[in-house]
Structure formats: structure tokens, C-alpha cells
Length: 119
Image (cartoon, rainbow, N blue to C red; front, top):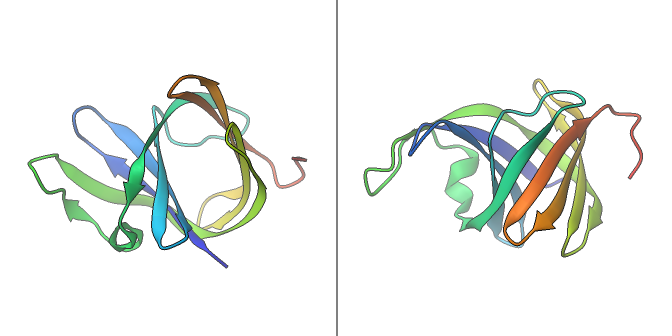
């Protein structure tokens, strides 16, 4: 099963990087808040990141702050289209469905739902 990681990143302001292992890279979204059951938060699609971030904690190159692992685990794809993505997460603290929906342009909405949620 592919892996995921959520990193707490303190630069330029506190946010969380949600990363999904796919095709040799980490598909990445910046979240304004950590995932919380039934809560939505603003998200932004970022460029793909290197797989090293699955296991990395520490300083980010280019004086871009520090990252600390907030969550990690594996996931299954439920839906993957240009504007909608759903994955079932099995992590250390999160178990359920993460949905990302493109709202406008680069803006997305992230929502974490219970394990019983549908696509």
C-alpha cells in the first residue's frame, strides 16, 4: 500500500503539508489546519515533493523553516480526478477518508471524514 505523511511546517507561517506517495513522488497539499474529524479547511496544491519527506524531520533547505511529522501511515485510493481526490487513510491517529476538492484555481477544500464515509 502506498504511504502518506502529514508534516507540521513552521514557514512562512504554521501549516500542515499533506503528502501522498504516488508514481515516485509525493503529491502535496498545504493545509491551513491539521485534519480533524468532520472539519473542512483551506488547502493549496503544491509542487510534488521528494519521497525523502516520508521519513524526514528537521530543517528545510533554503532557510524555509522546520518540519515535524504530525501523522503517517498508508492509504488506498478511492477517487483521483483533476478536481476531486479521496483516499482512505490508515495512520497512527487518523483512520478515515480524506477528501480534497478543487474550489477555484489553486484553492482546494480538505475534509476528513469517518471510516464509514462514502466517496
